[in-house]
Image 1 (tube, rainbow, N blue to C red):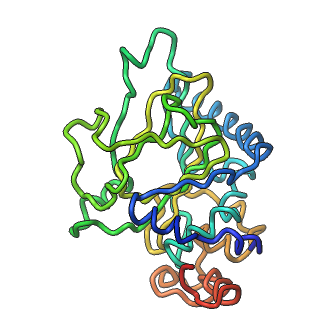
Image 2: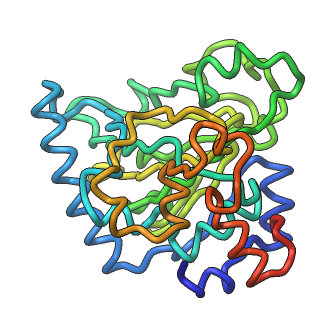
Image 3: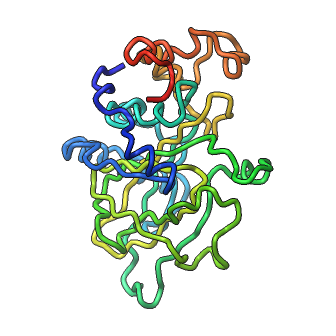
Length: 283
């Protein structure tokens, strides 16, 4: 794994904000030239998938399991500026269990913020987990990183919206999931920013009244015992991945028990943390 990871571990301020608000931002997680390269891959996949699925140019759409569709996406799996913060929150028994890229096109001519609004849709992630868990609050289980490839540093650009602190609320903190909730805020993320958020936080995308589509790559990390949320078509990567990348992509050397009672070879991230940090626990 890239030794630069040691320079980007979870800070105390980030840990406090994540626990308190349910999210935090890391600006300049990606350099401009890296953003440009990812945008090229993003636009190719978006164009191909829209054609395959029959979606129009103005449809706001998620493309799932994108990681296997371009080598550029694999680089972010254990990106040195972001992945250390994942293990800092979840620990070493982690995997990538979900990827989706979200394209929010500019609203068509004739639609306005005043007349048509933000087109919100508040939700928590992970679907059925939110019905199956009985505790209050529910356990976190997973988190996401959103890599923003478009400048959303001002409102009404398809911004990601959150209700800070709502990750400890099982119930919806409002009456209408399309309304702008009390306490809600748009996340003002410049291009190249990584936004980390607890899957339980109440959040929403929004309509884009800016000049270009909003492009975001979402990487979901979970404990290894959780089944992947996507097909995870990544076998073509495995021969060139190092052991930690293989762990993140779901490889087990101990059969099914390797996900619930892992042996050292199943979780090489633990040994790497032990060697370089000396604790084997989140920083």
